[in-house]
Length: 249
Image (cartoon, rainbow, N blue to C red; front, side):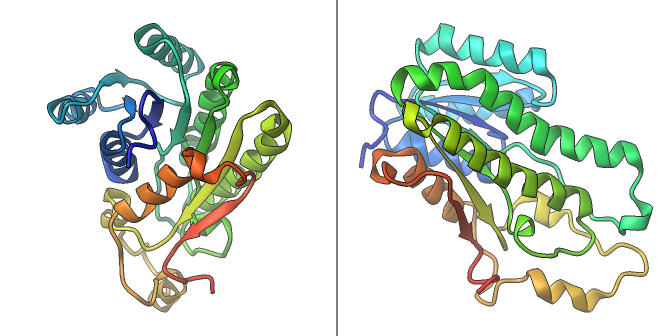
């Protein structure tokens, strides 16, 4: 398939995990990539991988919680490719802590990256997406839809992403831009590998967030994002699509 031939897609969190898998998937389907991540060296490596396979990619280092940096990133993308057709907000951070132990600065940082960063990137990209009838896929989480222990800031931020995305869907749907969120659960990413039980936690609560068919690779999410950003999903707008192995079923 070449659903993204002559299309330009910007992906945040592109250096690893779900973001990197989305870059790979879009590239395999003929898309041009703007790879965005705070880790410059890893982002350049990912863009080089795309170019090594015959694709086109631009690497940009950006802190998505910095409004000025976000605007500059989108400007660089337009200067390089001349257009923008799709946006995937995958950049995110997660801290596992007992709610009573969360420091205010940690809470604020998680929301700044996960929620405010998604807002800033959408706000900067939308004028260009509107020109071409583009699409947005925001990575939320199954924690946005259920209680997830030790993840208060993360769950709150991802719940905000789901609600924010629905607002975009209504506000810009008639103008030609679709906006959907993806709610992964049980995906084998660097964030999940960093998991440690908080001190004194009830470990039996972990069963609530584990899929019964085991952990899956980020490719499972990337294929969903590719669908939502493609014309195959031209009548899909304002949904939160679960990719969680039936955890919430």
